[in-house]
Length: 455
Image 1: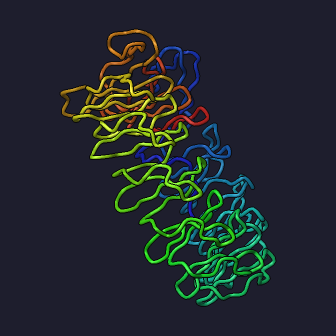
Image 2 (image 1 turned 180 degrees about the vertical axis):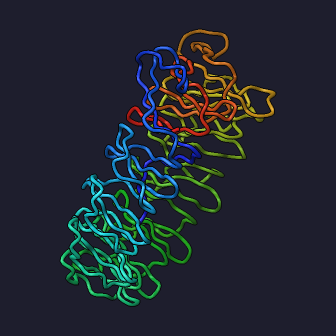
């Protein structure tokens, strides 16, 4: 039963901004660059604001929560002790008087605040609720389809829900009928594999939706299936089973990760890391001191003898382990690397596109990078553009063009063509040319979402 707010901004005073490239705004308002208009949608009266979701935003004033529309109009007054986003059904969970209920976008309590806790509506249209220490399920009209009577319960998934009576778990269908008897110490949701993890007498196994034990409860630990295999533990070692229960990869590893889309799983053996395929073959032997999953670009960061580099899925070190630290490549094909306390950017061939000579370097978006100035007591960043054209300051074949002075403390986040920046502990926004289109004047700010930002 957790909140689904999209973006929390920890602010003291909040203002909704709308930014559009029109005429310059009046000087009495917060400043925007020439050619842009900064339009105030609300007064400075909200203590907390969350980004727009399903056409409304959740706001807090004086400890009470309500809702604004995209124009800044308070469509539902701040009167609730807590409030959540509206879901795709047009309902939102709210708390009032220590109880939970559901409202629609007009503010009407479709389901009165009478529950001790409440969850969102599942795929079958039922929501899990708690009343007087018991769990049950309601529909969007507020009808208690399955009255609260269980000591614990999970939301419905795949047509069944795991519930507990006393010390035993079982499964019910969406009418409340017992589908699988109460006989498990622990039970989890059914997944796309059609199997659910259950525990009996301290051991884990798997059942199907008829309640048949497909894989006996014999493992010390077990996990969900991924790419057709599930990790299991026996006597302190990990291996993998298939959905029939066949131990396809023996329990011989100290730790394992799930199989990824590339068909490889990260494993640890004897304090070293490597990668196996679904047959159990060590495609890349366990020889690295540290390792990460392969990224979409087919490369993984690994460490050997205290140095980091990059390997491909065959195990070839395409960029040798020579860096003190390294990060995965971003969508622009650049990665941050460190050597002797200095940072730079490399491409996938290992060429330095920004020399390793700066206190800090951050790839941003759309060909922009932030570089930290040397010799500053507090970090200061300038924004640069990096393009594949000749220029001495960057590696041959690339151009590094400085767009701003070393003004910014950090807080660099790019969204909808504007980058949030922090200058002298105040936040504002610059565009892709480095122009500060909204002056750094706010104590806090969030990135633009659907043309709006919270400050």
